[in-house]
Length: 310
Image (tube, rainbow, N blue to C red):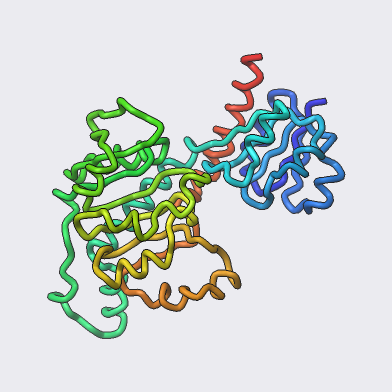
């Protein structure tokens, strides 16, 4: 039995590649949780994006599962430890969207430094004000990257042409200094950073990591960038930090609460949407036309490697 349930919208490249390996795929991107609970026992593997929390109930229903393939970087919607206890391999594809995330973060950063949102709005409204729309250059700034995995490394590489100093802190990695980055302690980050960018997964350790105490230690006003997971950064702390001047501006691709109507019901939402020192995007940093395909290709290749090793 070599069957894969595709339970989300994946690029056709995934199905093409795994069928070359001898798998049969049921491509059911609109399947409901109830339906999946009934049929998952018939599959060797399941491929998902974000539609489902692959929790213990679903894992138990998949009594013949050998792998769970997550089409994306994060694994926070998969109960990894429980799957591991059942000898089920968990695969993700951070290599597939690392270019997209890094480029999106740089786009946000350049826009914030030059206040392009305000300038564009004023010109469209008939206002031609050069002096008040003077920007800041990225050259000479210190960019601190928190988390030096796939997207952190790619951001450092892409920043190399901007003549900035790139430093990085990773709690679980050492010895990664290179031509693109200097490995530093958290104490050095808070002293040196002009720009702070998060590239870490959501775990019990990182949830609400960026809180009042975390922000307090920074010695200079920072530009804050988050294209990892929304729950890593406390939104109220960001808004208070902008108001107090501890945060000069922020680019947030992810938020603590995402999608409407839930987002619009948050007590901080009106302040968030009216904040002039802020750029928002709807969790799309890693979701380009190119990454859509690359993620599926990487995922298929990892399945191939997984079973080639057996």
